[in-house]
Image 1 (cartoon, rainbow, N blue to C red):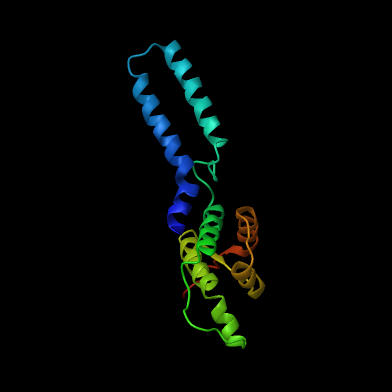
Image 2 (cartoon, rainbow, N blue to C red; image 1 turned 180 degrees about the horizontal axis):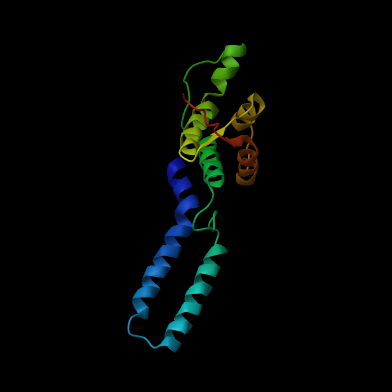
Amino acid sequence: MALERYCRDSFGYQRVHNLVNVRFDALFIGLSLTKQAELEKLKADIIEEVKNSGIRIPSDEPYIQKKCAFLLYHLIIAKPFYISGKIDADAKGAKTAYFNANVSVVIVNAVLATCGYQFFPSEDLLRDLTHRLLSRSAMEAVMRASARPIPITRQE
């Protein structure tokens, strides 16, 4: 469910944009330049309206931090990872309580690593991801502040 919602948010605009382009390109065949210009304006108007239709990321190619922020958001909201049983109040129990947040961060780091970035969440952020309802825009701000390029090490 989390991945389905993430895909809708991250790739919904791109899918609609591609569909409109394919359909309109098929209509252009055999039309005069005047009619093609009219259809091109209509296509641009439709694509502009799609940006205001409630699709969460209205961009053909959103940057990786934004995609990862939305992925983290959906994983945190759905809470697909958990440990059943009682959690003790000691320090080990507190870390176990953040299990969903930690696993979600590992998944987001795997995605970020494909572009040479790594996400460094603090203990406070893991607690907030576990116990507070953070918005998509808050996740995006956190991701921009905490995702840094992975340092390249030279091997001799």
